[in-house]
Image 1 (spheres, rainbow, N blue to C red):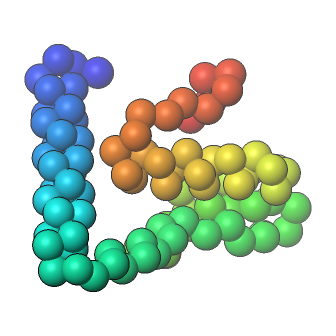
Image 2 (cartoon, rainbow, N blue to C red; image 1 turned 30 degrees about the vertical axis):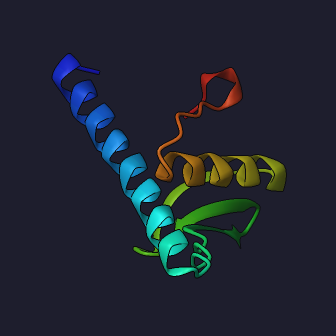
Image 3 (cartoon, rainbow, N blue to C red; image 1 turned 45 degrees about the vertical axis):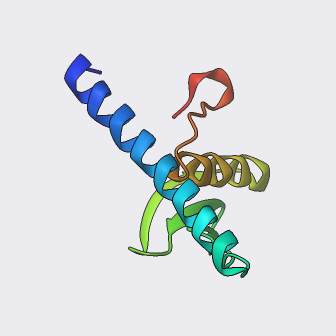
Length: 93
């Protein structure tokens, strides 16, 4: 990845973390619990494959041949959406 793009990605990730912290602080101040975050990705069986679908856009983000691999991939996508850097075993994307 180009250095300027990586800087942009890192900057956006930092802003995302700061916004989460500010939101947590706000809910603490008003004495309420934060709303539960909804699931972003869903696994759907299509024939012999499992498609991982982004619920907001209904776009397929990938597919896997076993449920376990599909579940792991969906969890990685969720973590990445939360700003956590995660890689799949074996370097697969």
